[in-house]
Image 1 (cartoon, helix red, strand yellow):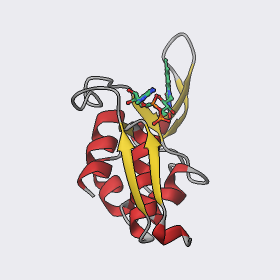
Image 2 (cartoon, protein in one colour):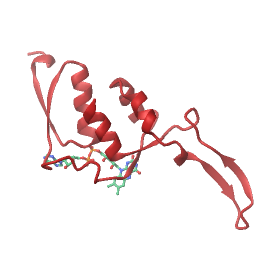
Image 3 (cartoon, protein in one colour):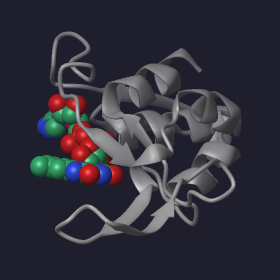
Length: 117
Ligand SMILES: Cc1cc2nc3c(=O)[nH]c(=O)nc-3n(C[C@H](O)[C@H](O)[C@H](O)COP(=O)(O)OP(=O)(O)OC[C@H]3O[C@@H](n4cnc5c(N)ncnc54)[C@H](O)[C@@H]3O)c2cc1C
């Protein structure tokens, strides 16, 4: 039996399960997500996830949703400011799309994006 003929069960519809399902779907492999919550709780579970260049961003590219991710991602989390107790600023770096290696996205936003895809 080839991988395409198999049916795969994924336990949990969080960011991990949704991402895996999308990657499998893009490769023509059937998968079913089993989620214990009766309805989508991802928005309520909040929290901001930082998506790293060498891990999370790679898989978003692989799944073809990287541009959508960029439209919702926040880069300001990587702004860096160094100042003393008087407020004198010694270093002031504003992160932007080129500079930021791990932009943030709300967990709910990421899950909605993956689910819609
Ligand atoms: C306090 C805290 C702070 C964090 N801060 C950050 C941060 O700043 N940046 C960052 O990137 N990451 C952060 N994380 C990590 C981030 O939350 C996880 O990386 C991410 O949620 C993992 O996704 P997941 O889909 O693997 O698991 P989860 O998000 O845990 O999703 C699992 C899903 O599986 C379902 N489920 C569980 N058991 C079953 C079952 N038996 N049957 C069916 N469904 C089931 C659950 O209902 C849930 O929907 C933080 C985590 C915590 C707890």
